[in-house]
Length: 408
Image (cartoon, rainbow, N blue to C red; front, side, top):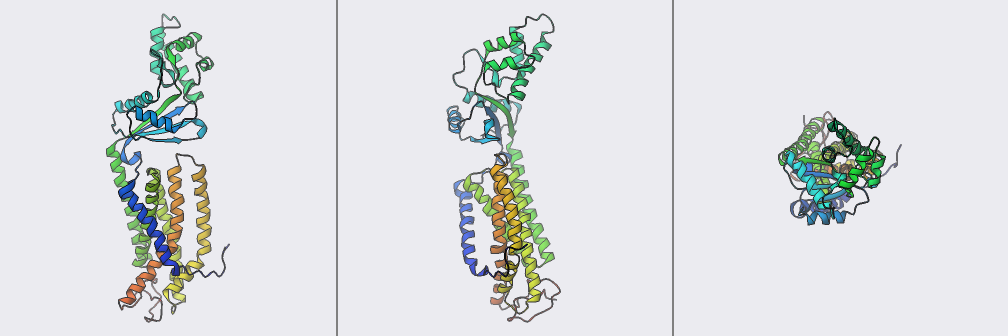
């Protein structure tokens, strides 16, 4: 299947437009990373505390941020996640302690910030643990137990907490819902009504990544990217010629720079899943570039007496249908993931959307022109331009032909 037949677009004739486009986005990304927003490392890399909060109603993120500010929690990152109807919010705190006390500290800070007008002498049932509920029941002894009280109140506390967390999703909407908890004793329900109140939220989970672990992950992510680029350089230098490897590495570096720059400009966190997406895009972009390079090498053998620029243009046009089919179908898939995948996959899918567009563009607009630019430089130096053809094609005379084979 082909979209285009006998197409003859002068891609190399538009190389200065391509260069201007790449420079604009590359420079904007670099300026953002250096002076404006920096590299927006996620909690995986910079360390910090993630607090997952569920509300009984649709939360207003501006009100949540204002509550954080009043509590002295400066510049937290607040975002909705999951299905919108679940009313879940992720709060990213800057604190980086990794002790058990730090887990409780993050939870208590959020509870203290969000709780307003709590009744004196009452505890929040939505944020009470099983142990808290049990201890309260042991103290009040609403069932008037004289033996085996510890086990029975442990069971009652588990019934209440499990009904809240598993059936209601973590938040009681009203005290009347306590009556529906299977196995809850009426005396226990009445006692809880007296000693507890309901806030409109519950802290569901707290996660911490220490700064040392984050720094190690940053180094490993950087090394993984560098190793992949070095591996491509070696492979393409062996498979084709070294200039092919250089062109591919420059192209992938260009793609990565623009992708990371886009994350910086949009202030989107770079997490471990985003790094995985970037590494995937390095392979994807490289694959598309190799397809173009392979067609160039084939055409060099058939069109020995034509200019390299003409050969490159024809090769790009011949592979254009394949490029559009492959990239188009992949792009539609990741676009659907970006639009409907939810907040958890937003960074991963955004990296794929940007990377596929830029990777497809760079295979045509960056990688191929580098080969022509290298040959032009060799001609200006008065050298024989015989460095960008695959082995075994023989020698050709300089000046009249586009390129020759590797010198034997």
